[in-house]
Amino acid sequence: MEDFAVVSQKLIPLSDPIQWQAALQNVPHAFGHTWESCYAMHLTTGYPTNLHVWQSSEAKVVFPLAERTYQGYTDVVTPYGFSGFVGTGTFVNFMLAWRRFAVQTGYVCGYIALNPVLGTQVELNLEDIFVPNRLYVVNLQLSVNELYQKLSQNRKRQLKDFENQKHLYSFDKLALKDFFISNYHSFFASKTAANIYNFSLLTLSALVDNEKVLLIGYTENSQVKAVVVLAYTDYMGEYLFNLSLPGYENQTTPLLWHSALCLKEKGIPYLNLGGGVNPGDSIASFKQRFGPLDLPLRCLKQVYREKLYNTLCEQAKVDPADRTGYFPAYRRFSQKI
Image (cartoon, rainbow, N blue to C red; front, side, top):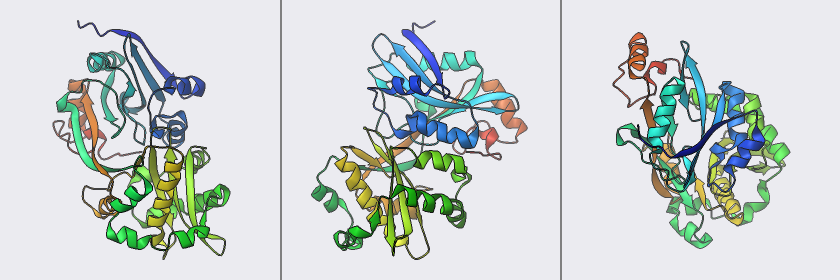
């Protein structure tokens, strides 16, 4: 058996936010790693969720995972957001140690999303890596002029009245929260959004109440007409949602530009705009016009108990060898957040 050089390994549950927060101190991480984000997602899914903390003599690896049951068996998944393996140092043989732990714990398989910007030095099995999409990340370390010059001509045109309209943009979190919560489900239903966005009111409230979640809205006659929602840590920001009333869709661009400038003022180095629903779609094109870095959205699709995984897939009448679509394949027709 390999010497995995693991000094300590523990799971911190959602019931211990203080220890969770302490484990992330001095570790570059995204909002998706935080207790606040994972707890908010738990309010919708109900999944038991833990922060895994692995340490060797020279390194530390931290990542959140939610446990899901299917016919009495357990698989694991990263909660909604951009988390994945982060940490410090180089953890030799970490993936071997992780797989051994997953097998001993009885996990069937695992879907682990990888953060596009942050990470740690662990060896990944190339056969486990999939790139289902692209992500667009604005480098806020550039000057405001450099950021502006990277915008497409269309984006610059949409921002020509930005300075003159600044008085119409609001940071009134109470009013913006009310608008966001009141319109969220009807807005996403009108867009025929995927089930993954069907968050409970408790989740939405927990998210926007967080001090690290920024809401910026566009108002007319003191009435909110559009809002964008972003979350951030000291290491990166993330564009979460935008909502607008009919006729105010054109406010998304100036609201996002305003948001990027606000995060830059806070010293946040990156803003992850996310990607499209599918590679190259209109949503992806919209984000590309901000002149961002174009990065792969990578994830790991790992099977730990292959025989059982194959059996569950066969019972669900899906191909266990096909890992290109929804994973695990046996959940394909019973997708939940």
